[in-house]
Length: 507
Image (tube, rainbow, N blue to C red; front, side, top):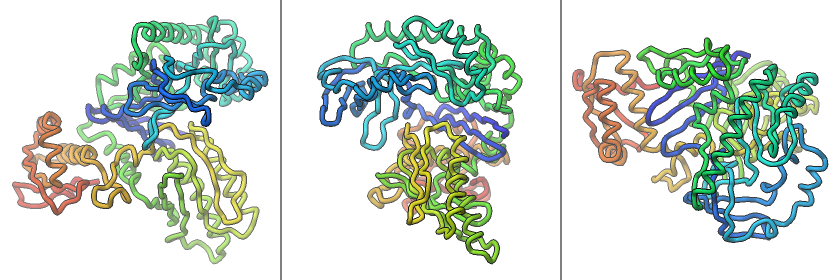
């Protein structure tokens, strides 16, 4: 499988696209006002202990208090990937009640394991982990775990022996997949840096009063390069020169052989347009997903979970209805796995496949889905069989809000029963329209008509961004309000041609 990574870096929004065999497989988006929290370490204060829930609330300085469960205070050796012992698991089963572990007013060093979602605060743990390129350092304990994705028994044994030899006192270590075939000096250098980082954050924790952020995890781009840029990746293309040089500098230290796979996008045409990624991203907000053979998925979100309906739609196939249903369901199983990754959908997922009469065909559908989700880096659990009603239940690890909800807001017209793109997203689309226009034509004078709320947002809240946009695209832009437009719509009018030209550079 060929994997390429494309990085679109901008001051207002950074995006990373993972493309597998020519198809968009994952999308990462980060904005300055909505940076990811997973991996951040805080010094917090316990505000409440709830014995009935075996959990506590901890103030870490965010809008909502964080949630700490008793099981997130367990010995990490009980859950690590391959190095945990039965003894560790027995310790987990006999875990003391939370009221004996922590009390109101206590200060604690905690790490965010799950982003705040909806009305819920961040999920946290007292068991810290510091990821490096080759290993993960876990303060406390003395165990060594090896990634399950390293299948060779000899290599697993070699790595375990090497790490047992160089493991710092008072730390446990998880060996990552990227450690495969790496020398002892590489692992040792990684461990040394991680220990230094841990000592630094402990020092910060002693100096700072709660609540305080004492360690910030790598930004999105840096963590993707660290975690995903492996020997399996054919190339990484970046559209920002400073970031390009930063990545080069990092790779020269940790993986010099990967340097030749980095390229700088130099075209005026936006990088995601040049590689046909933008049009794929636009589809991610659609409720209906069309498949290649004419079938379709309909994806609906609810508080309790995500529900996906499989429809034959325009698929005709043969005269054999059972065979047609099987083919549509098999294609749907593959597409569901892809959409879960693309849209970053977590929690409970229920899939309503087209009814099948034969049990062996029903099993084929389940097997296909199980096989496809193996590519997913999130933890996924799939039911072993379809229910009597043709439903398949599964869960996917929820670390952050899904893509749609993270980049939209409740509709002011329908009181939250639907979704519309926020003004920042509308402005971002306007920027990309102007970039396409700038790359394709010499025309620069436009009247931009938007919803009054969006006009106010642009002219009053984003004046600097507007000035920067005018400068970069040479656009002489006149912004006007239009009450007939919805908040996510916009219209460009050419002053030169006295014509609505919106469609000329829309995706």
